[in-house]
Amino acid sequence: MRLSSFLLALLILSTSGCSWFKDAIDETSDWSANQLYSEAKEKLAEKNYEKAIEYFEILQARYPFGRYAQQAELEIAYAYYSTRNPTWPSRPPTASSKSIRVTPMLTMPGISRD
Image (cartoon, one colour):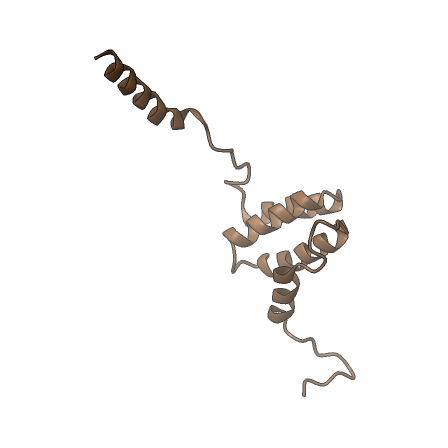
């Protein structure tokens, strides 16, 4: 009887324990696309590349077809390049290759599209 009461109490505490730990609060959850882009650009100007990349990636995830998404791709590639950190990829595959694929070819004097 005593053992079963102990096990029952342990079971109740272990299942309710999950609610004791709060999820990390996302400070950007109510930010607009404009605010996300502005904050990311500000972090980029401050040379806080990790935070800038994080904000640009959040922007792309929330507003993939918005007007800032394409520019965010280029900014991510620039931020990766600017870090020059050997633990980070030297050529971020998604940022640079997707930007090249998505960005239309510019018409410039002396360059033909053929």
